[in-house]
Length: 198
Image (tube, rainbow, N blue to C red; front, top):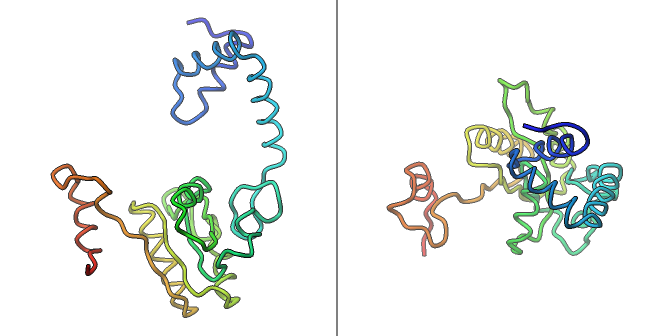
């Protein structure tokens, strides 16, 4: 396999992206260099600028180029309702649903004692400061439905209880358009346990 010089380095660096294997990286590199050099230059300039200017929002910890992200700076949003998510990508996912009008707190991970990730590493001290300030009325736990995500949600719920803040968990279960025979037993169990009156 020929992997030398700048072309080889470009392919190797593109492989660092999640979900991009050697063949995909090779296709991207050849496309940019053969058919879209202007696009390659724009991409390089944008990546360079983003890596220098984008940091964490001082309030919710999502990615932004300002001190406060556009969501935290938006006075029309309900700052007493805080949705806790694991990553900035989760903020984008919830926002695309266009139903949540509160604000966020991004953990940048979940509790994982085996990996040395405890409450401090995911910013729970900062979240506790917000709860202690008394401005939060409800905390919505939108961590992933994994063992670590559930453990993280449980710890945050206990923290909320300490400050008399209502803690709710997003529903997990059968997706829209899903057929029961194709749903795994864990998801189906969650759906039955989270049932509500109609």
